[in-house]
Amino acid sequence: MNKKLKIGLFGFGCVGQGLYHVLNNSTGFKADIVKIAVIDKTKTRRVESTLITYNKWEILDNSEIDVVVELIDDADEAFLIVSEALKRGKHVVTANKKMLAQHLEELYHLQNEYNVSLLYEASACGSIPIIRTLEEYFDNEELKKVTGIFNGTTNYILTRTLAENLSYQEALSQAQLKGFAESNPVNDVEGFDPKFKAIIIALHAFGLIIKPNEVLNIGITTLHESDIKYANEKGYKIKLTPHIHRIAHNKVSVFVVPSFIKSHNHLYNVDNEFNGVIVEGDFSGEQFFQGKGAGSYPTGAAVLSDISALSHGYKYEFKKFAQNQIPKFTNDVILEVYFRYNSPEDLRHLQFEEITEKYNGNDFHYVIGKIHLEQLFEYREYILTNHLFISLLNERVELSNDGNRKTVFKKELQIF
Ligand SMILES: NC(=O)c1ccc[n+]([C@@H]2O[C@H](COP(=O)([O-])OP(=O)(O)OC[C@H]3O[C@@H](n4cnc5c(N)ncnc54)[C@H](OP(=O)(O)O)[C@@H]3O)[C@@H](O)[C@H]2O)c1
Image (cartoon, rainbow, N blue to C red):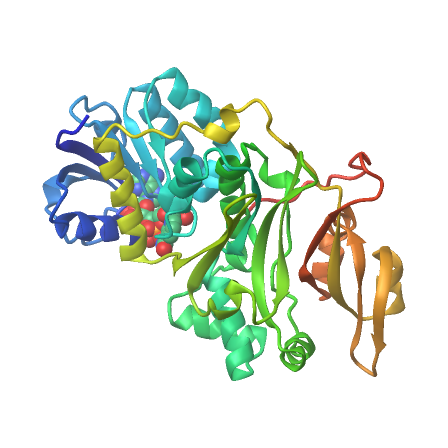
């Protein structure tokens, strides 16, 4: 391609304005934003009014525009915009992880069918270039795992709880005041946002296309002072961690849970709003990436990098997906966890395979043991509504002894 691209931009909020700034201050790369679609006619915009439109077709039907950059906050409308753009032969750059995680398969087929490129580096971990790294650098090597901290809001909250002895609620309020958490934080604190990112990453790391309701996410909303005290006493930090683990040779497990992290783990020092990603390959060993997972300029910079890649004709080849030995997605795994509960009834509900430690204080009860991931899936709502807390220990994920045990239960999770 290598020509000056003409961009139609959807959304002029945090990331849209970040892109506008980063693009205007980029010395090496030039592209023109020729139209910006938004919805609210009462807002004042810091751009020429002739650039603004409230009609999406002014961009989609404009044959001059070669690239649609989709940066809106509505996943359903984003899917319509992105698929219409691809069908009209326009390349697309998006940061919308929820839309991508829900529609990866359709979008993969659309960009192939219409021979256009769909890039989305900014959708997973902001300015950390994890998707292109997996796609280009780890295209052949088999990976053991990808894990990390994919959500800055929860990392900020968890960091403040431990560092300042704040309760979960106090730390959440602080995060909201500082602009690190939205007024409705459910997407972040219940672990949906890192789950969407894990689903996108699982495609590029292992060639898997998984639906969001197949992947367990347990967030941090039930974190209690006693869990924080326990973690502090044992020298752990608490992080919300997505896990994309190859188990045995041909199975991959994906889930999001809080984890107790020891000081030798790279993630231990990834604090506040920062993100971190660990990629472990069969031969290369462990690689660690740290950076800003969100924010106007870091995310804008990731979007600009995709636009620049487009100008050189870049396209994801989905190399792991194209290989004919894609591993199977499984929830048939056993995790080692810390589980804080309220009453013996809680323990009767969640059947542990093995319990190695049990503590029964006056108002603090916990066990350490091994539990099947499907048990956590089945009792997710029970755990949340009864304010119980679960945290992965030692990053221990093993294939269940039952080997090929069928998924006995797959609960539909409501997607936020
Ligand atoms: N914020 C981050 O740090 C970050 C990081 C990574 C990825 N992302 C992703 O980037 C996307 C944008 O996030 P954001 O934080 O920039 O959101 P935001 O600040 O809430 O801005 C959303 C923008 O989208 C516009 N919009 C909403 N619906 C629209 C529609 N149907 N047609 C045209 N414009 C529409 C809004 O228009 P009005 O201005 O008229 O209201 C607004 O300008 C989301 O998918 C988000 O998940 C964000």
